[in-house]
Image 1 (tube, rainbow, N blue to C red):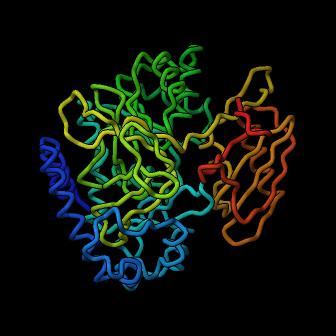
Image 2 (cartoon, helix red, strand yellow):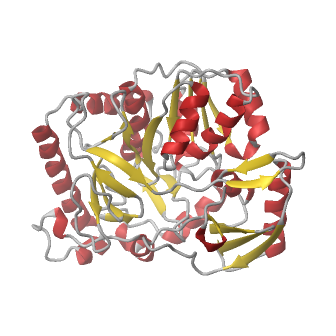
Amino acid sequence: MGGLIDKAGLAFRLGGMRRRERWSRSQIEAWQARTLERLRRHALSHSPFYARFHSGLADAPLAELPVLTKAQLMEHFDDLVTDRTIRLRDVEAFATQMGPLDLFRERYQVVTTSGTTGRRAFMLFAPDEWRWVMASLPRIMHWHGIDTSAPNAMITTHVPWHMSARCASEAGRLGLGAGRASLDCAAGTEALVASLNDLEPVTLSGYPSMLALLAENRRNGQLRIAPRHIFCTSECLTPDMANSIATAFGVTPANIYALSEAGAIASTCTAGDSLHVADDMCILESVDENNRPVPPGTTGEKTLLTVLFNRTMPLIRYEITDRIAVAAEPCSCGRQTTLLARVDGRSGDMLRLPGSEGCTIAIAPAQISAFLRGLRISGWQLTAGQERLQLAVVTVDQSCDADLIASRLARGLADLGAVVPSISVEPVVELERGLSGKVTIMRAVNGEKIH
């Protein structure tokens, strides 16, 4: 199959990444300028959308180019992709039945965003582009001196179109990390605890909200593992979560910033809490609500992402709702990459419900998503009131079986040992947004936190 990558190609890509880690700031910026120029030329020549979108701007600096929104991406998908045979309808049809290792047209990896901002977006990666994605995580683990062949466990979704699930399946196919185990967050806390106790992983990674749940089980003695390394990814690692995890396991969790659009693009190192950006993979701009740059140390209202390695689906100044702050000073480790002082966004509140045995049951957003898997829901938002839950859903095909959705959620909550409150389901065209334009997928009445 022409779309499969091999270990040799992956090792070559990883070797280049590691060499660039030793570059000076001027070398990094020169690399970015050359790569960005090639990306823009390719997009103008092969994408009818960019030929219009960037018309007359061939020589303009990056900061003067228009911003690409997710709505524009999906509306103009067929004209934006540079493989002129690709059609969105075919990608959507493929995604509804794809398996963990299936490739679109036996060439392209297909990944979708979570849909928490109201609509899913599809991302395509050709083989060489996928090598960048697959090499991004081993590079970060190398920063932390980790032996990837040691027993390690990742807790994530097993939905086949999710980035982490795709990467885990591909790592298994390539035989990377003989001791790797991918555990499904939908399994429930009790099953995860049992699996982890059997595996005794040296490295543990997953959603911060899930690892915070496991920290509670570590403190009460049910979870007996003692990992030497912990990685948090796919959600915002809040100080409370980091402290809870560190206190329970005796390990300071590393923070990985990963995107469906580009893979693992930033991470902390052993020297501090700031995150090193993979400058050879992307350019990040922290901007205000009007797309104006904010100064270092200031958290922007949104982020503009330019992916330097994807030619199939060029993303140039692509708007994402995460809020970042670029650090004012470099890291003491000596790497000259862009440094992020903070990454906000994508942090879901924990839903806590009374348990059937008198305890309190904590439910993470990833578990709610797992309960709703397969129901053709492209986005959801849970509002918790006194003795009731209201679930707003955006469906893929405008049809909504409210009773089925409610029963699926109720069964999932009951399986976790929660006393299930009244549940109502409301189909909506678009999920409600906060002042920053970001959707809070789990919230309480009057905007109070759900815990």
